[in-house]
Image 1: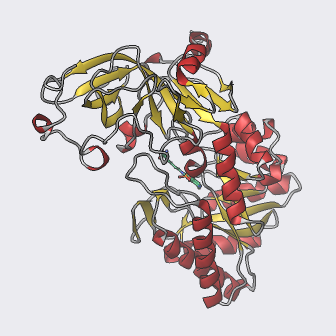
Image 2: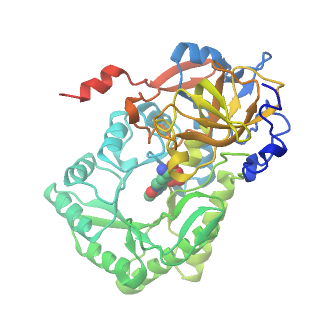
Image 3: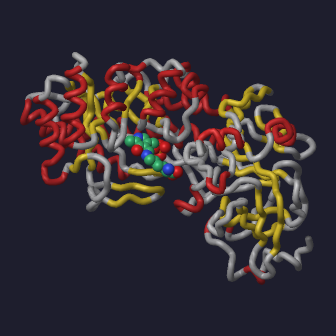
Length: 463
Ligand code: LLP
């Protein structure tokens, strides 16, 4: 296609996006290491490779769309978190970002713990051999049956989220003749996302027990009175895709304030504090995430300083990164089906998946990058929108992107940083089948979650 048919220049001025895609990148074939899994590169033919495997071969063998997950990258990020926090802290991988039995085994081998938030995640963890005492069980409305299973299995901690749950867990533990280790999740009035945080009235949401008005202190009183519960600490999770540590600073200050009040009122120093997850990753070249060792250092300094000021012994810290471990390790491989130029606007590139394998763009206005993966191209940049095959105009995978103007049906394109919350939030909208997760390592590929089939769909439909 010629530049005059799809100009990226002046005729597009009124539709050019802000930020990363405000102008075409200097080289459309270049891969920004920040957004791609560690072993991704291009081979001599220009084909994208991962762990030494060409995406064209992966597409042929496993079909598209497919999530391609770099196992070595996953393990090295898990290890980096583990090493950064050392032996005085615990890293719980947040399974909601992406969980499968292979992932559970990798985490176990790399010495991480696991945060689960449903009976399904708990079952996955236990079936892959994660020791129960390394599992934390979360959720704002765990069912009685889920709590029973968790207590019976001997999970390391249940994170209590409401006054009703305090009584429920205590009752179940007692009926099973157990004393369950618990934390109380509190809301500290801080909400953080991406580059900013707000410290105002963010008790107005469903999670946790507000610190404000003394509710958290009252929850502590009740837990300490119940024989079935052993209170090991306080939990706080402040948001998602956070780059700025100041939200954690305020949260730690407030959590430590509660620990001090507990010491003064009950004469008890709680041994643990969990600061949750939420650390950001690079979805585009504009994002600059911090390294795990910087995060570990910052958090440990904040907590130590706050505890010294409160004359408390520094508690054991735990964190729950999900996205920061798995997010960058995978990309979604799609085949282009149609290329539809809208004169003076942009070109709509339809792929064989969409909002059923990545709901994040439609749901959160999330930004993604994209690259032509099956070859390189010297064609002009073409302002594009990568869309799916669903019957909905909001079915957008990458809102603003430059792709080469000679893009054609049959080309493969790859969207990086889709490891977190894409497969785990995938749906069957329009009865589209959920893609497989293919793990690649050292020149070998294996399916760790297989592609859904029409039989799978019809099996649930019992007429
Ligand atoms: N711990 C707790 C208690 C959480 O609620 C969460 C995420 C995490 C840890 C892990 O957060 P991460 O490190 O992965 O940001 N679906 C949304 C994200 C929802 C996160 C919910 N809680 C998305 O796609 O961005």
